[in-house]
Image 1 (cartoon, one colour):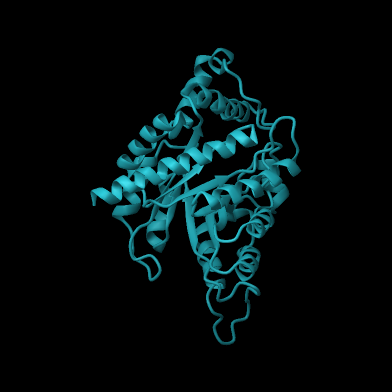
Image 2 (image 1 turned 135 degrees about the vertical axis):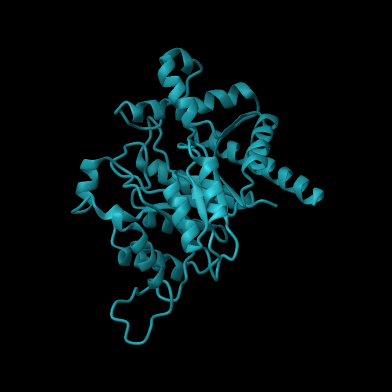
Length: 336
């Protein structure tokens, strides 16, 4: 069985509020736990009026408190925005409150625009220190050495699993060098996916915790009872992507049934490429797409995301996807 998980950006729907989004995340997390999802990850984004997970560790604390067994984690924290010690304390606190349930995915991008990045920290040069910051952070999660001057309390001894996130060869190379699991942002930047996976696997250096490479594929899912319903659900994410790329981000738009008529061919091409790693439509269509992606990239895990305006439709989409992943897993297990 291939583990399947949720990546939730806690979308603020058009006509809704950040409170709605966060409460929806708690409800979706409970739903995902009941459906057999392995992890529930949230992502750091700032100055985005359509995303409520800016304070990622705080949001994860809420989700963890709403659930019992599902792992919760960052997918991810943009480490250049933070001091490693602060992140070690935040996620060490989560791991102390919810033992053996916390993951920490780390990204190198700021997760926002340059003006907001300056508001978050003094310098924009921190990304050059990313490998050193990752290693420093991991040290804080280990048992403290005698006479260690700086300690993460809570945090030390929790050994929170660290993942490297990325959408380029840089992250793949770093994850391989450090012997860490790697999650590729194929749900919005799939251009280097095949090459990054190859580089990661070919150059992987085994570590104590991860003797083998461990790759997670991110896939958009817009599942419904029919292909047409799935296509309409996807239009919210398509509109949001165009709005973001044209400098007009906002709440997650309501779905439309004529998206292609509303955008020029160049914008449509951009969106189609960005969202090419997607499974859309009826259960059968979603199963076909997910099966092809899994056969092509051979992930060790799959993480599913879906920016869907209506909360009930979003829950239904993840319900269909869970059923599909279970069927795919059963077929693969039977064939082995």
